[in-house]
Length: 96
Image (cartoon, rainbow, N blue to C red):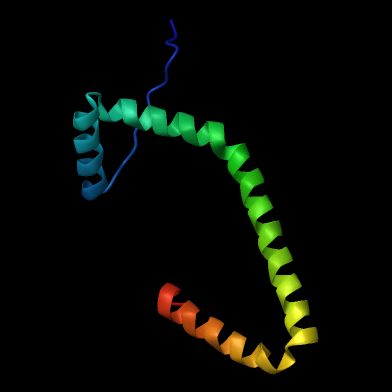
């Protein structure tokens, strides 16, 4: 006889496990219930996220290209300064 559900083991570091258990207690359910809901949500949104990520990437590329063309044609004297400030902010806010 087969069961409709399959058993799956997941290993979490202690901090994540403790947070999961605490959240489950707050919501009045089990850690397994939360994990199943998280997996359901991830599987349901996988395709949507990919479409959304592609859209955001396209918008970002368009904006970058449009601004680069505008700056090159109308404000070439500011281009190096803008790039230097961008690099500075990347380092400051993103450590890159």
